[in-house]
Length: 508
Image: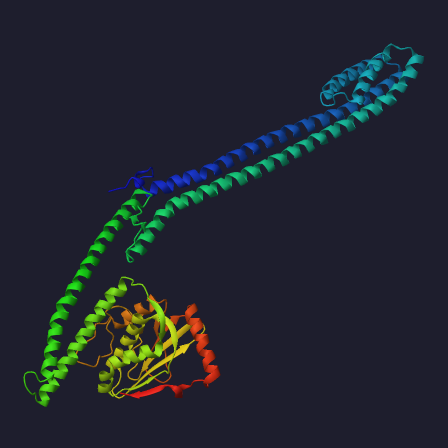
């Protein structure tokens, strides 16, 4: 059933969310394109109008200059030839000049040259009415007239330049405004992209954490409660399917636990009776036995012990899989090795294997049970797969940040195709196990889990002398470092540097 949290508004499908994200992210960019188009259109229109006005006003100023020259030329020609037609042309050009000057004044408001020209035009309009002597004197008016026309032309050019500068400044302002709008809208688009990316990837990450957490037994749980997936409907449904899968796995895990408990009980109880019976027969409770009968009893007892070890391995595997907490304490690793070797004394004697172990004491902080289990499995494998009459070497090297324990034996090397799968549960390699019973394939898996339980690692390494060598690496904590420094100090004061000759050589 969909939870209340997942019933909040959301796109009905992932496709709808993607399309909505695309539209919303593109919206600021669309606004930016529209505003940029509007600004460009406005600037283009303003530039076009200004350019047209500049052309018209420049042409008008040039026409006024030409008319001024014609008016002066006509007036001076009349003074020479005294023809009435020249005065008529003079009046026409003067009136045309006045009209053009009126239009030019719209550009040059309160311009002194324009005001002066207007006054001179009034004076020049009276020129045809003057007598000959006054006319000759009035021709001197054309000198200031020409200067003011030239000043008007320069003022026109200056006003056009000012207008162009104003247009240029407005263009810069428009450009600056567009840059700010671009920065703001692109930032908005990026933020929206991040928002929708989070909306899309958050449920995916929730599903990923749920999947990764299924194997830990806390798939998607926070404070003991399952956190529902929120997002598009498809991902919500997938989250619910994962919830169902988690419940099924929990049920299967519970069934497995129940099966292992029942199996261990059902197997160990009759096995204990069988071993007790063989012990009674060996003690002669029912009478003396022949040597052949003793041999059969020894075989039965050995097989029973092997079967008990396999059952214990299954229980150990089940215990490690449920993340038992490590109980770190200070240990003498040499003592732990001796304890484990004592358990296999009879098997080592039967195989006639020579055992070489490192000297003690070597103090380190570790989990006693987990470390002993690692050594037990490695020594058992060495006995099961090593050669008869071969060697078993156990070495130790305490470094600044770690302890390295190596268990090596002679015999056939492990095949290359088996090495990547050595620590997988229930994997059976190509090497043949020596003995009546076949292994379960979980010994090395249990050993590797015990190493990881302490923050260490178990690996197969190459050895120059022996065919098979496993290395257990245990990290150092503050206690381990202090113990190591103390041990090194004692060795430097009282003992020479240890060498391979200091190792204990045992023939079992």
